[in-house]
Length: 278
Length: 316
Image (tube, rainbow over all chains, first blue to last red):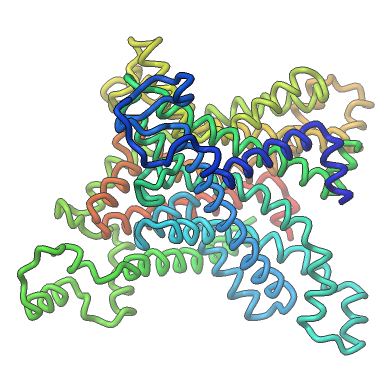
């Protein structure tokens, strides 16, 4: 609650929160907000933006606004699921690796090191090539790309935490390892994971868009923002709105998440808070 | 420094091996095997003939034998054969790699030069309009999908700069000026988000360093502000910036895959995407391994340069 109040007090935080909520609502209420079903065709082929079709229509007469709204929904689904899965699994791996140490730590961190040795987009492309295009596979690919970041972010504070008196005292009192991890370790190291998650969502939106731009995202006719840009690129000289609007919407989404993520980071990091004097 | 270098070199060997295992296994995750992919659905071959083909490609051997043989080939520079053209992958990648490397290096040079300058100005003029402008540009730069920016730049160039040679790649050796013209917009599209990241990192690091006692001592000694910033503060502030730039090189290589497809540049990205569309898995595998191995080597060089800049690192 304190964080929320602090967020709303900062203009950037308030703007980020409001924009994020608008984007989330847009995605959640896609069937209500979209004027037409995303695959509905009409005779109005490549019609310029107007009162009847705000974002214009594409080469099959489909409403670009409706397709963009559904694209936002898919983008949000993929970003939330992949960043959420990466945060959950990555934190679990990082915390247990840091806490137990030894061979488990070495194994986990070596595996994470291997995943990090691939440029992220290339890793996602490689995984998608092998798994094939589908919504679930995009989530798996992007989730795997961001997994090592969470494992590293979660492990670092645990290394210091496990040496603290409260852990020694809990062990002396006979507390089990799962209880210590749940009651004493997790609550004291969750801030950096939350910050990382808010930033990972915006990166996941961009990665999903890049994959679908390359034809490695969700299967058509399901609209994805990257695929909409790719379709629009071939019609660029005759119907530029087909690529312009989906791109602007991706930019708005990522801008909202970045603004929110940055403010959350500033508020949760006491060092940064002191530097910023808030 | 020698011990540090040797240690770091030894550390990168298991990572490279891990990368090779992961890349090798990628192809084995595909349903069926390479021979079935080659034959497609229209195959009239009998199971015996398929088994013969599998034996020819060594696919009937145990997995670890296949891996060791593949790794040996990779180390000798044999990246496998393209299923589509039958040509060695190394031949197909060789020419394309220069284009990708040129694009990445130009994008990095331009963005880092601009970003470090902007980061210093933003930190020195903290709270002023230049700081606000730089920070706003950075957040916008981080939010723009690079392939969309590229598409918009192509549109703008076609409408307003018809004389600019942006759409046809010319090798540097043939015409340096036409080559740089063709690289200008792709490099800008690719480097914008890196510039944003580096600007923010430089600003944050400079702010931290400028508040330190040794900087105040330098000022108290009577040094000019320019000398304090450039000779004393910047040198220390650059340490985290170098790390970020090194790590982002991999991001640029990945991003180049997309940008090359936007601008139709004949780089590795085009090779990969064409190979994916033609289900040419050995070519995808060879290219992915080559880029990942290059990324590991770059990370190694970044770590070594980190040791050079900061003596404390190499003595730890």
